[in-house]
Image 1: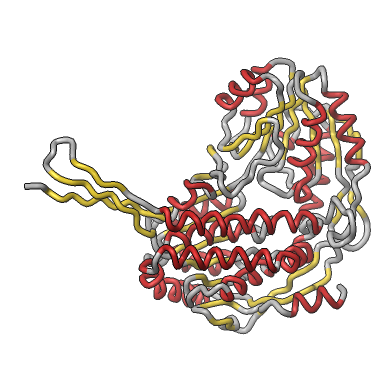
Image 2: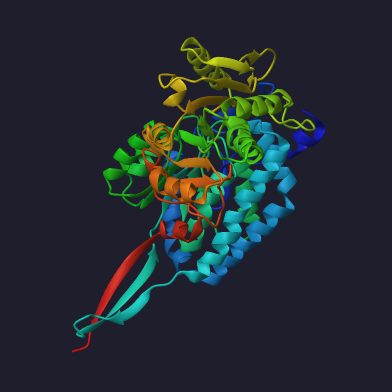
Length: 487
């Protein structure tokens, strides 16, 4: 770690942020944050207790009434100022993200741009919250339908997009008039802490956003979710954890938003523009080193173009530069930890043992850090574990099909339904696939779909609720109907 990196990390408070103050954990404990490219400890942050969690919720509850009563224009201007500060500090945010998560610096800068857009988008949505007014059909009264903030929220974010996942939850909550407690991921808490310092600088009142870092998610989450003052829970992470949180939230009938696992199909038809399809597939698979719920997991290619498509992809993959994300032109950084390497390796070994062909890569990389070669596997069988498990690594797995019906059947043969990708030059076929694929999002001749102005979310066991777009703010609003009799 060089002097610039050290100075930046030293500028980030490793304390909890409660009621507008940076404070130590109640028991004074801390946890290490490591650089996955070297396994070096780069920072320490406070390790919160259950008592700290309750204090954070206390602060959010105390601030709720005033924040809900704050004019929408004021909330909008704070969010806009936060967006401006994120742009000013984009290089710092990107560097911190790369240091704690490992992704190439260029991708971290991309995440700063994407994550920042939620601040700008919801700064604009804050002043557009509206209801309606009208007569009852019988003419006996007037109906007023208004929107009110849900109330204090609790956010649990994942390690793979530490800025975007924070802004995607915090921005609409602030716009709607809700306060919150956020628990950043244990592996990558520093980006969120830096972002909250930016919110503080933007003029956010005390207690409106509170941050608790912890080595045990359940230790701090359970008392908050069990508290009847909490009104909303939003989680991004695995389906298994999401199910448990939904069950806990049911006790107090909390509003919940869940963005859970994915098993994205990437379908390439025989009439696809292969140049577009290759570019789209590389973006959909290797963005964030494959560690994304939106990553293409099953590459479903028509048998007539599969060999040529796979060859082109393998040539590009073989030329990818592997290294620490801060190095020039690196395209593949480390996976988040050794467990992620073990999983990628096991999935490749399973596929090959069931008859698939290893076209490129497939091996761990020795040395410090948790690196795994970008890998291409072809001839995947329906019984391979990759067909049902999220890879969350740089493994490009190809399975072939003959007919459109077969492609749809393979694509939909999963408990998940987050996103799908389809490449075809046939417009009618593209529209059929929009209707036939069971996913909450779809890229038609596009390998990246995320946009702050669009509703992000899935169906089936990929979750519930939407983040982003006009739909995103409604996750933090409660509809109230009032009747005014005319007689």
